[in-house]
Length: 186
Image 1 (cartoon, rainbow, N blue to C red):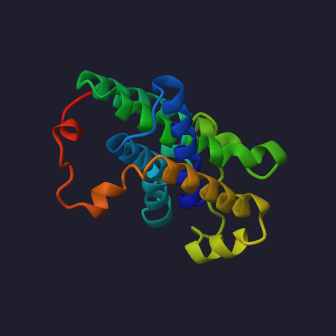
Image 2: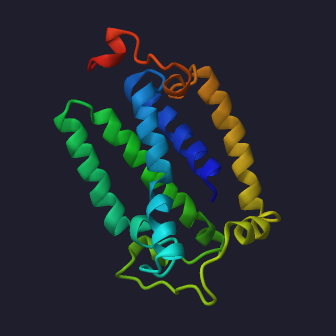
């Protein structure tokens, strides 16, 4: 899945969680942790595999549940230590949804889910070097899974809009946070 799809699915899951658990819409800083978490596995694995060649593919180290689950628990523990458990939950939802969504095509034979348990389960490296973003994009154009990302993105955008665009104020308001409530713990 591409970055847009990952952030869309992560946002939908997090928005559902905040409503069910806290009875409210997502707020700014947790959404920023969510967005970072939703991209985290690729931000680690793609450079390590594609440019440095130290891991076999772009879905190994940070996509592995053997690494990602302890990391998510660590982020949660640190966030909880500072009375900000929602930051850790947001990161965990983003990062774990990323990996699980990447594994979803295995349900219809589209990918090998072995990366979920790497390095215990080996994965095959690239046969002819790492793919380019252009090659990946062109190969994705006829894939219904790729096209579904735009549906998820549209739904996520509508939910994000209904929630008041949490996170956007960081980019659009140089004086953010402007109130004591936004600066202090809840």
